[in-house]
Amino acid sequence: MNLLAVEDVHTYYGEAHILQGVSLTVGEGEVVTLIGRNGAGKTTTLRSIMGIARPQRGHVRLRGEDITVLETHEIARRGIAWIPEERRVLPNLTVLENLRLGMLGASAPNGGADALDEVFAYFPRLRERIEHRGRFLSGGEQQMLAIARGLVSRPSVMLVDEPTEGLAPLLVQGLTEILAAINRRGTTILLVEQTLEVAMTLSHRLYVMDQGRIQFEGTPDARRSAPGPRHRGQVEAQTTPPVTVWNVDGGGTPTQRPDGLSALLRCSRW
Ligand SMILES: Nc1ncnc2c1ncn2[C@@H]1O[C@H](COP(=O)(O)OP(=O)(O)O)[C@@H](O)[C@H]1O
Ligand SMILES: [Mg+2]
Image (cartoon, rainbow, N blue to C red; front, side, top):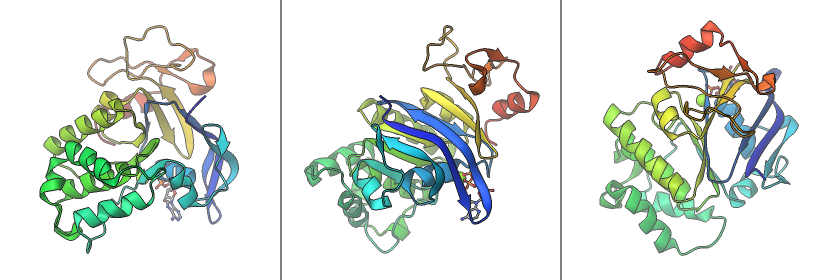
């Protein structure tokens, strides 16, 4: 069974029909990445999962349970942590106080000190800054804190929206390694990421989104030449063209990639 499933979700902002039938799945232990240009609907997809933007049609399921109509805090309590793109570190609270807030949303009351030690192992910098207020942290530190605050709730799945946005290349690399380590230790991740290299490095599977729809689904692993049911396509890194993309609707038949998409995939940032 999928850990998380989004099924034919339609979400509106007012009259505007933003998500037009989005379906995706995230398996236990996976890193699944949503990529696509600005305004494609990636953030709205995460907000729809969290019940912040309410789907008007379709379903969101966690381990098979329909969570579409639950309140956001109930969704969080069931084990979904949302790390929004704006980071939303509380400026007047210290690092420790921000982390304690994250623990309030914990799906299980599991030893606060252990959870703190665990996040400080990933982010030793945060331990050094433990008494500093949010507003005195650098952009990179704020991103670390935003992720750490999600992590202390020991989520089953983290929704991470553009964590590398605006960070210097060295920080991007460090953060990529940390996200990979977090995943290796058992946290499933649904990532929104516009830096293709990061997406390629981290993801087991990728969804390309455009205009409120999933346009393609694939894996970044070109070596997996015989795609199984969970690996319906391949998206090769931009260094080794040609890119093979399998249309989601194509029932497993490789399609000629549209020129626009291949250009899209060759850019490291859209
Ligand atoms: N709060 C909002 N009210 C109205 N329209 C919105 C709102 N947030 C986003 N949109 C619109 O919804 C579309 C999808 O936005 P978003 O999900 O943020 O895209 P992405 O994260 O892929 O850049 C865009 O056209 C955006 O302008
Ligand atoms: Mg966004």
